[in-house]
Length: 316
Ligand SMILES: [Zn+2]
Image 1 (tube, helix red, strand yellow):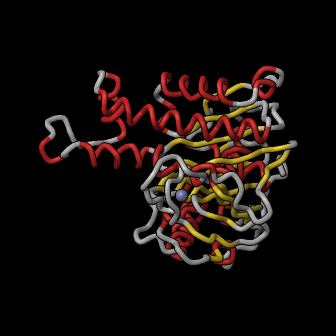
Image 2: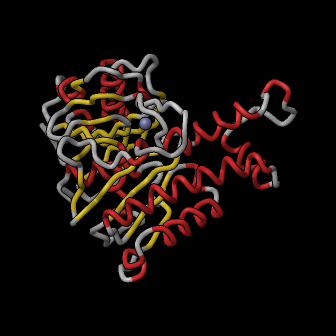
């Protein structure tokens, strides 16, 4: 018998996060586990089913194995209105995967699949930093750069579900390949992975006394006044600020939520990006519109709460 409990799952490249949530939003069970390697879809589906069985057997919640719905978000291109994930570089999926079908084969409840940053913008809008807003841009600055749009009071997916891929807008420099297959995407120049890669081209890591080179390392070098590191961070901040100010000019949101590890611990970086946006977006979009930038509040569970809102009809 199905219940009014919902499984919400965030499938990432390194970990899978699962929460069992009731209709009132109470979290009954929470588990974080490594993503199977290799990340075959069937192995991931099996791992999710194992968690359901485990919760059912050990948590005093027998209905956990027959939920009212399963809502999944994933770092990949999810085709709207289908259960297909077209590409997920993080999971090494390069062919379409009918993930919804694979998951629902053993379940009798509805299954929804959503892109992780689409889910995150919904989560932050309904429960997080953009509560009460109807026009929201969400961006995550992490190893990659992703985005989500919540416009006119609902999730905006574009015609096929591939909207808001701000990380792959271009060009933000010359000569850097992006993992999407394109060149000079924002992500290829300003993500955590890019900052590290650029630094590795400029320093010989093998002779560094304070290595290895990480994103953190580059930020710390810049903060201690190293001119090369400052230049790398400046370029990243400027690229992100310019990309986001273009979005603000294009979409006229009231709230821009910034998530991800790069901005999270660094007030200064967040501040710089915010200043670039207020300088470069058209005046009325930041002066007349009551526009604000905010740090994400729900990490690392923004996507989870987004798909929860979608499967329970609290957002559309
Ligand atoms: Zn790209």
